Amino acid sequence: MVDTFLLRPVGRVASPLTDAASAPRQGDEGAPPAWLVFEPQLEPALRDLHVGAELLVLTWLDRARRDVLTVHPRRDESRPLTGVFSTRSPNRPNPIGLHRVRVLTVDGLRVEVADLEALDGTPVLDVKPVLGPVDER
Amino acid sequence: MVDTFLLRPVGRVASPLTDAASAPRQGDEGAPPAWLVFEPQLEPALRDLHVGAELLVLTWLDRARRDVLTVHPRRDESRPLTGVFSTRSPNRPNPIGLHRVRVLTVDGLRVEVADLEALDGTPVLDVKPVLGPVDER
Image (cartoon, rainbow over all chains, first blue to last red; front, side, top):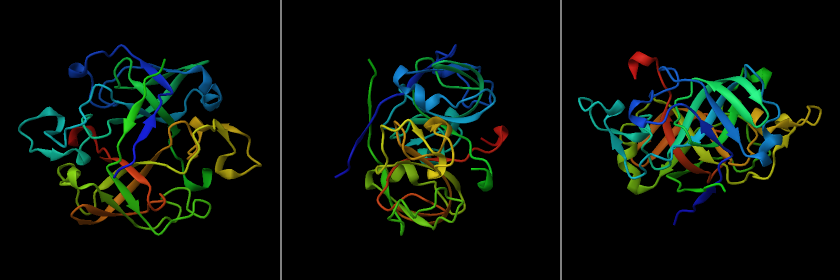
């Protein structure tokens, strides 16, 4: 018996990217800037975000398949089928996307970030700072 | 109107850590080895995990509070209240833990990893490889 847990998105991605087949596979592979648009009631959680901050954004990859356990990495059929826990495929039992980005603009509930490969409309689940050295935490 | 999404854990953490108040705050702050114990039906997803692999483990921090939007970082009341999206506090709207670990042992559905600060019984949501350089993906 496995418990289940309910995710409530904290916002959405607004991006020029709308097509999974042509989107970059990772942020550092040519992804454009995008906006994170937060729910109004979350304002206190985001009030210390600032231009230049390095963040990890967690998203719900709502166009992914959850029943896929092995894939050809990077959709390259010449590569052997690989367990999804050893790949970054969006298709996986809990399709949570993990994106490292830098803040470009903060405008109230809207935060612009560089290099985000998530598609337009993707739900945002969480935002975390990239950790610095232990003695600076 | 916000959609919601259902997480189904893929396994659990088995760890000597049972008390949040005394647990290390991050894996590189003295956390012990722990085992990830996967659900049997997920076996194909984990079959390429190997000793020495550097992984990102995502967990559901099931003892966290979801209604907390600002915290004193590291429970230090001399530090100002800070929006949770600028901290690694477990208390946040979607309490997803992110842990960088290294595989020590693979034994069927059980994978031992170094330096995991998650508490015993914590649900595991996903496992991803740490990304190498673009031309090695």
